[in-house]
Length: 378
Image (cartoon, rainbow, N blue to C red; front, side):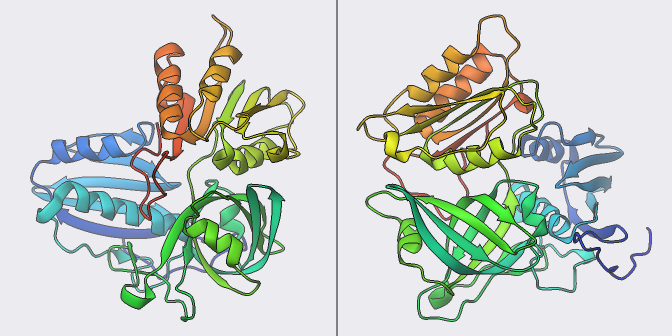
């Protein structure tokens, strides 16, 4: 086994000058069944090779993960260059080990790079700069922090952590398994997932757009009541990015508007396709920067409750000509619309997993859980 060197200094971009290497071992009775379960949870395109009797290699958060069995013992090596991605990849491996092995999983302890720190490399403490109203039902909060370069790529979404009012925040730290250890009791944090609408890493700030609704949840109350200087935790980034394609079809309601707006702004100048955005009415529309070849159309509910129309599904079906090459489809919406659009992508268009990303951002009648949605990705 190769000797593990001390952690090297990082470059300005946050990437290490040499690979970060960590190791973990755990008893696994049925290696083939374990690998089957693991690959069910991970991206089907992540596996470079799968061999229960040899070495299985995966790419996870831009990290090289190698799994090898010796009798009943599984050995895992995770190698990467960016500390945040390296830490997240280790945590994901540990999470699925615990999930698959259940009560048979022993306490997991990583060795190697990052094993001697309690810091979560993908966490930042932020401060509120301002909170402004964009439209009747959309409010923007600007947060300031340091060392934000990693949040400009690798995913559109972050998890914001709201500390209890009147208490000094106690933030999560990394445990031996590289999983976050969360504060409890009076220091318990409320968390919500949002999209980074704008980011200026050099200036050190991000913009978070929040949909206002009644009755208000924790996120609505926070963006309405927060004041400059208030502390907020931020974990991420992750999820939500579109793949490279000849044509694009972007679909979403208000909750996905920040993600669609950022995606349109970051698409290449020659990108072509359609973006359909469902809002209540004209006063909820925003001016969006987008490539000339991307046609942006606003769909108005005109007083119908959010999550009760088929506007997005109808627009998706009408935008794809029969017999034409299907576009890459990205959608973020209410759960029922999510199911309909996912069905359209898979059954009607025959898209594989790498040809679409359809996400249930919310479910009518329910509030966002503090835990990630089980229905997140198609």
